[in-house]
Length: 463
Image 1 (cartoon, rainbow, N blue to C red):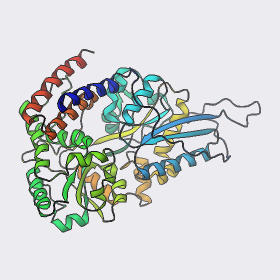
Image 2 (cartoon, helix red, strand yellow; image 1 turned 30 degrees about the horizontal axis):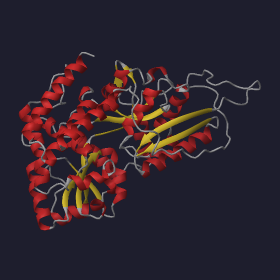
Image 3 (cartoon, rainbow, N blue to C red; image 1 turned 90 degrees about the vertical axis):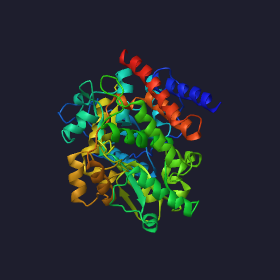
Image 4 (cartoon, rainbow, N blue to C red; image 1 turned 135 degrees about the horizontal axis):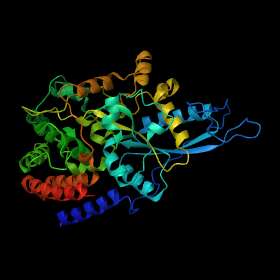
């Protein structure tokens, strides 16, 4: 019964997420409007190209009032920094008011899809690279930034082409670069003899995890929510075996049933050895692992996440935070780390204020004042401007810098757009949970995965 109910749920979610278009999803829960600042100041008259962009009064002393909506996900530190940046921009540009709509990661994508399909999306949206093909492939929802007043030259062009371009149009302005890393409670590591300089194999991690949990049933080496299992652990494991993404550019599978079986066995073994906190306990903190009680209390030693999450994990524990490489199997073809500019901002192509939105985006990414306010709240900066400013001002978080360097070393790869398809993710999440709960064996799950993927990819290829 569990299996059939979860399959129905997965199919329903899939219909919401990619059927852009059916308009299902949640409303505005979890969003908050940013405070307004009515301070007056000298008013900007032109774009970077020198053209007047707003209607002026007959006397030429005021510009058209513009309200921009800006949505993002994150933790408290990101919210606070972004709201402070918004206030600074409004003070310098009194004709622009920016309404912040912010929440945790869980449910963000589904809400965004709903607003895009209904024509009610914000002007600027924080966005993940993996969503580009789904969203832009359904309709031209995202603006071509090459036609807007935003400086793309400060971005590494490899990052722009690999992470932000769709059909030769730059649509995502990456705000950070990085990949997967293991965040470590240094006190826990010292207590249990975890060597932070070592690249462990998965078997070595599980041996240590079993030893720790056997000695104290309240302690676990690791924990993970379904998104980490789905987007990080299983994809990392497969990439270490194959050297690349799970789907090839021609929509064929880049893994075998036997390889998927091994990847699902790896997840099952992490739980059966006591290395991983029970899934039912960690599920309470989906999308907010930094709030996991055992992590906060020092009873969990490792959280696996992306390098941009450093700040929230450092703030969540009293002990010193450090980081280390993810586990890598023997004879791996890659480290399994997807190193790229995976998070950034997009502009709603249907916005009536695209140029004003682009100017605000450019300010956030390239203005010295904005860089000093935002610091690394979204990760290691992706622009040369931000890196220069933060290096000069000694604002680069040393743990994040170390994490980014580790993630970028040792043969990483970059996932392709089709492999991030949300329907593929929904299928994978469902099967992972079936294996964890014992409703399917890894062998059965892998067979189901290959069959479901093959059928779906054929449909996507022919769209």
